[in-house]
Image (cartoon, rainbow, N blue to C red):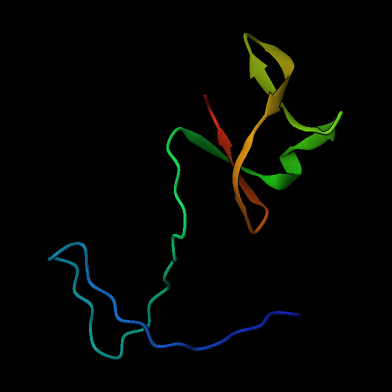
Length: 84
């Protein structure tokens, strides 16, 4: 399938005291390497390029409009767009 896996040992610290983590328990973990505020998360296939810039279609007031976007972060075909 083209999926590469590598098992690693990590040490975690719970951010909530009432969230028990047991020794030997298996967990799904997301590693956040970068974060931004005021972004919208969408799938990559909802975007398209026009004149070297990315665009999306949005609904506003009952009408569909084309809007240019700025890609802030991207990972696994999910893009986060700047809202400013």
